Length: 290
Image (cartoon, rainbow, N blue to C red; front, side):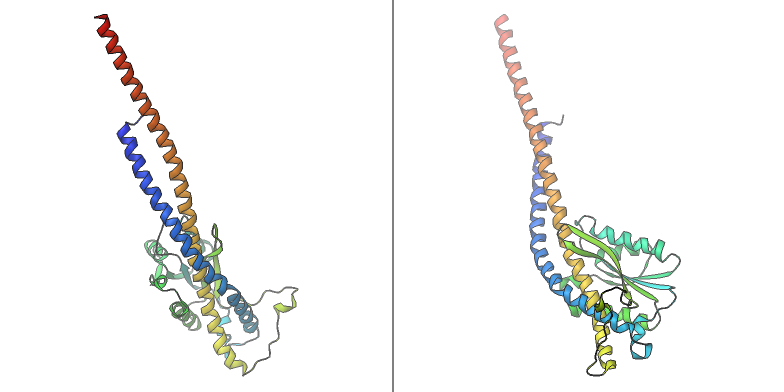
């Protein structure tokens, strides 16, 4: 058994760590509330806009703006990987990196793959693994807003229309709740046609005012930018949820370890006191015998 001094030092060290993880949990909880409000407000608008985009794109040809929905044989792929700038959030970032590796080795095996990263963790990891990271956006979370994300979407859209890439995917963590985040790979370009369902709203006949071409030129780019912005907001909320959960577990584990160490310390201290008493009693008995 470790000496009293070593156990005491471990108790002090783990107590300090517990204070840090507890503080980080509270900070993440506060940030999560704001991030969750942002994605909750954005999601209905983004989903409805995406639905309109899918229905609209299905009725267009390339001359009307359907260049964003043009299907081509997939040879060159662009993956937009959305991660965080910081760690200590469980498997949040590793799930993104694993998903990109899975896409590269399975779905797009043998294809020419390039990456645009949002967040340091994916950019650093994928660069080390030999991926062609053409652009890193590490500062977007300093002031996350639509104007910061829009240029990233514009570059991907322009590259797709120019034929530089045949497919563009977004890999991010979709926010479900504070304890649950789902890593998804979402098709960004070409714009996917609406799924055929029995729901009559799935295929809508729109009346255009003003001209159809004018609406298309504005709506499709705006919808695609909104899709990437929503994915980034999803990821941002997921990051704080994952970190809050990870720090909560770390705090609980530290508390359990502290309890064990204090029990061990008290047992060692009690044994030490008992030994001292026995030595005193033994010494007194020896003096009496002498």
